Image 1 (cartoon, rainbow, N blue to C red):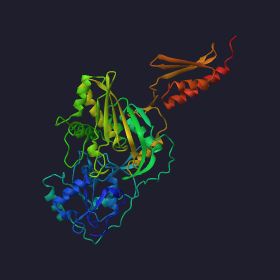
Image 2: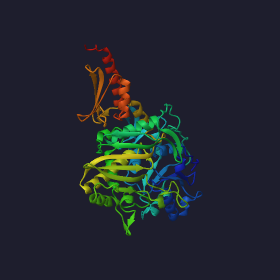
Image 3: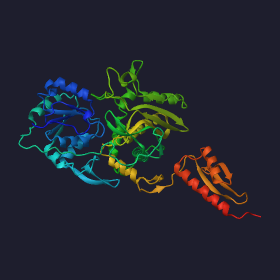
Amino acid sequence: MSGTFEALYYPERLHLVNPAGDIGLVTLWSPLRSAKKRLAAISPELLDPDHSRVAVISNLYGDGMYAMLCNLLFNPQVRHLIAIGQDLGLPTCSELEAFLEHGLEDTVMLGTPVKRIQGTGRVFPAIPEFDERRLRSRLSFSYLGKLSSESLPSELIRQLHELPSDPGDFMPERLRVDLVAAGSDSRLRRPSELTAHQVVRRRPLDCWEELVVRAVRFGRPVTLGNGPRLELLNVKAVITDPVRDSRQALEKYGFQLETLLDYETNIMRPELPEETSYTYGNRLREHFRRDSKPLDTLQATIDTLRANPETRHAYISLWDNSLDLPGEQTSDDSGSPCLTTLFFRKVGDVLSLTATYRAHNLLTAWLRNVYGLMAIQRHVAEGCELEIGSITVVSHSLGIDPRSPHFQLACSLSESWKRDDDKDQQTGRYSLREDPSGYFVVGVDEQERRIVAEHRFRGVLIKRYSGERADRLANEISGDMAVSLVSHSLWLGRELARNEAILHGVPRLA
């Protein structure tokens, strides 16, 4: 073995063991501390820099697969990947296997050329320097199961002894693949109130699209403990018709409907998988206790709403202060839920849901989380015999990682966003976006010689505005908060000005 491991990307997520080692251990969704504890119990030599073949240990939280492969191109002495730990039903291992067996194929997303692992929804940037052939010819991969697997000790030791070592007569040069770094985006950041962005759209994917555009255009560059972000604070997204998006619409952005449906199923499971500090299903259905018994908070919410449909106590907190607040025994990376609260409220004959998230990865987690919320809402609504209402998602910290392989797609979406109208995801056709505050009918009353603007909602007259000057009518309408969409406001301003010009051009009646 030769060469010394040097991380190009996400060094804060890596635990170096033997920098000259030729094996990388991937712990998937199991925390590093749990994996290291298990490895030490199997054999102390596994973590001994002087004896271990293991170069580095890392999990694959978030969207780190592409960065991991770039790190391996820069460290060609690492020839083998071994995955251990909890996969949470996600296709990470099958995607790595598909990459090594089938490679990448060219495709286009949002007009941007990208690479996709054949047979999967995993996409990578189309960067010429990324040498997939080298990786596929030199790298092996195997998954040995959960940390608690009875076969893990013997199988891991066997592989560490039997996996072929590099003969040392040929070692490729380090290959550097540059990702998009924080601050390299030359687009002008647009000013806004960072804590006041709100999106109201019909379907989950519609909301996600606008959120991405807003984060790219208005997000402030920050550097967190785990790297750079474009961040918006306290973002509110209202999904007025929370039903599943079409397979075709999802695949346009690299989302797979089956993966989202699996997430809907998993979020309802109360069991806490081994080696996992929390799951939303466990926090909701088994973690907390009442009368020394596990408390199913969703069932308790159903009971509360059935007893009093107008209650404002249908509120669930998933945050456990004793475990989740960092302290002497814990740290920021110890694993704590991003979903923190759920609030159910009967609105008319439907059940609405408001969810708050402490932190949100917009490109990879937001849409998946919304599908989980839809499953939770359906469960509670069925228990209360109510129809489904809107879902509101409040993200205290909503971020985009500019190192993500999806970042260029986000930029392409922002650049292609030219109008505020509603778009049919199936056909791509636009239709007029209706203002939830109503609409205006604007004209000139020739007898009174005044501009008239009638504010209507579903055909019913709300208020009649009348005057000789467009600017005074605009001020009055604005004071009444009668318009909620920017596009509607711009249209109304033009109509008032146009009818003022018509008024001045109409001869006075005798």
